[in-house]
Length: 301
Ligand SMILES: [Zn+2]
Image (tube, rainbow, N blue to C red; front, side):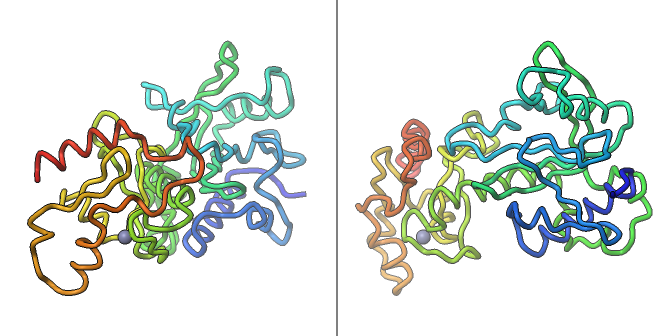
């Protein structure tokens, strides 16, 4: 049986950082392959709160992938106090899982939060600490910290200090953006909404309303999967997308002669409709946000 403790949890986080760096978001099956000192220890369970056998404290908590239009639980449960809130399992505070979740408050052991970005696919967020119990609302308050906050990592081995390690350089904001990115690409089946390009390296999750503004939520209906060209063209108002998904290209662009990229990439999409939109109604781009953004295109045109 694997012995719980800070060392074990650090090993889990180090492993997760390396896995994400190598593979991106992690499938459930991969989360079952972690081993510590030769012993297999899965990091996920059918319960949202997972404490392996013999553990007094939960090791991971999990948020399932939700319907694309829904605000992800960790976004909408982000309190004004800067803490996140994680729901108990069902409604009985004395369930073993709930007790082991609360036990993390006393021990101060860090946990991993697995955030669903597609069905059965997760991005781990860590370290997270359970800091308060809220039995009245059947939830605990959770603080998500940066890697650098882990005390032992103050004297980190070289692999931790490398900027190239995804998990290390990861800030909270970047994780949110990454989750948004994965969700939007998933909703558009990995294709540019305008030209259908499918090369992941060339695709972005574009915001309809920029994320710094009101309405700029990191939710799928405020997103579009766009290739680099169309993302840049959209952001600089060279093209606009009307609420009926009709694409408009600025008139001066239409009059320009500048070779095949301009012709096929921009001029020829003028007047057509978005080629790819999510099948699920609730994941489709929000017409109100499109309209608001389209006004800027018209104003800039
Ligand atoms: Zn494109």
